[in-house]
Image (cartoon, rainbow, N blue to C red; front, side, top):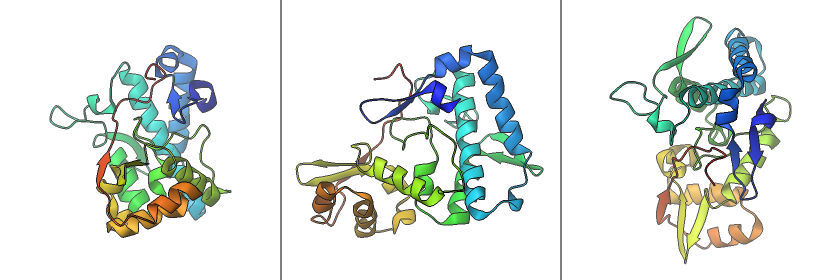
Length: 226
């Protein structure tokens, strides 16, 4: 389904046909069945790589369903957890092993806390242009590490992740919001970026020691937005 309703655009952004997916009752139902299937599994019985893939896939599928069900929206932040809370991240969206879970529970309480791996941020997609791309196929435990490294390289080497404005380094706000996941200091964040950067960008990164600014585009990653 992901390949059917997504497109890898020439600008390096994976876009989703939310409108088409919403119109397709069979594929909306298939997404629901997939979420129900995952929710019925016991991730404790899986290997660590398969557990990571399980939680990342569940997060991405739940996020897709949130946007599809609310479509049309300009931003995922328009889908509210409550009248006080923007975004769907704090409301209960799944139940695994009898435990009610929100998207925040999965991303922060399980993936970030359980793995302490900065590549978590390249695995989950928040339906926004500023986010690393939604993978066009589900994560798998087999080959997970190189797949996560590839996702990291794709984001770091795209202007959404890293950009220079003259000599000033601007990064995705992800690296500010979750700086501790990438080492904490500007220097450690830059070292992380350099570790995934192509040679020309890496050379520039190694010449700076501070991050001048950050930016993030919350517009929904829909095919209508180009």
